Image 1 (spheres, one colour):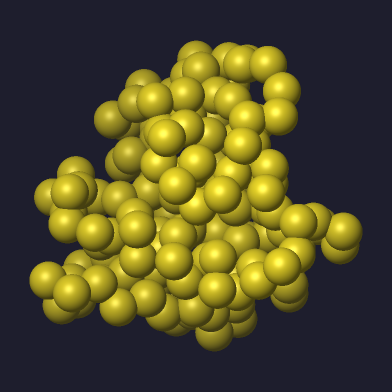
Image 2: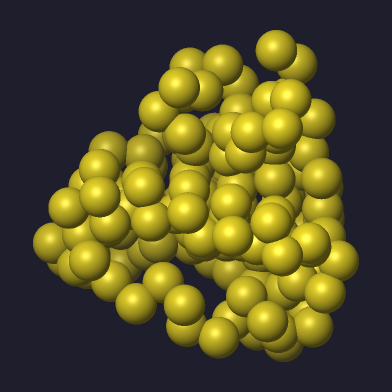
Amino acid sequence: MTPTVADRGFEELTSREAYALWRLRQDVFVVEQASPYPDLDGRDLDPTTRHLTVHDDDRLAGCLRLVDDGDVLRIGRVAVAASHRGRGVAAALMDAAMARVGDRPCRLDAQTYLVGFYASYGFAVDGPEFVEDGVPHLPMAR
């Protein structure tokens, strides 16, 4: 599989695509990581938010949300289906996100075990570790 990234706003997603996006995030964060959290925070609907996705045939393999907070862009909700891990999906999503970010300041809260992955994109830890919904994270900026 050669990951191809689609980049769309919420209004460009079909209802089935939105459902698949939320289902993948639920499967990864809530079920697999046993981290119940309020995923539907309203930011998906923001007209400046971009949803980056990778599909394998008709199945959603991964997703990433890029939120524009005005002075800084924020990467979040990066999820890859268990069946597609280790196949370059996360890297393809981050490559596309960084192309969209360009020279703008960007932030993310990395699950601690993924700090090295995000560091490879120029992000550096810029604060103390914190636990969010039972999962250790580190704030990172670029």
